[in-house]
Image (cartoon, rainbow, N blue to C red; front, side):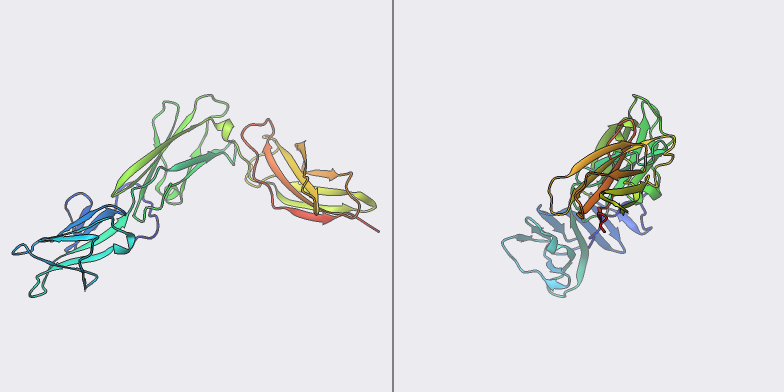
Length: 308
């Protein structure tokens, strides 16, 4: 059974002994693989049967008639099929038990619409787009990703990146009002869905959180704490493309958080604090001129104020 999403790009790998059959079917080494959608009605046809009669088995066990299935001559119809009914079906001569044909029934869903997000974490070097499907398909699902700037020719994301679930757009055009267009298409044997997303680079800037955040008491300063941090390691040039920072802090036991925004510095003295109290602090980064959105918060850290 296919329990994981398989993502491929470009040419589909096909065994040399596959014979094409009807839609949703392939034959490998004499075994027919048939694909069906969970919850639908599925009909299996016994090929090579003689006298118009066949006995059906599932995983070598005889199939008993129920209200959810119908046996008509050499065909087997299963109504509102469930994932538990996936398996290897075979039809046999009722008298000799000789197998006429074998069908490996694989069940799943067509892909849902891809949910696409694009962010420039390493501005101004690149944009990274990623995606996920609305649903689990239970079937091998191929992902194809293309992008273009304005009306330029579309470019295809690399196979290696697509397998990892993302696509990096290099050499991005800065300060342009012309959008980029990204198209993600998910395809399996039951269907396909596409999503087209557009963005302006400066509107999707989102730095990673600051790193090496620390807070410590200041000797002989019972109402102050020293907060220090470093710019995100993924931000290419903080001296040229400046960042500003948001500081969120609060004392132990309080639900009231204070917020401070500072520009282009990597330390700050928190003052006016409660003596001997334990304070919690976290920091976020944002593009200096307010393009895009703030980073996620850094991990929360804490320190107690200095006391004799």
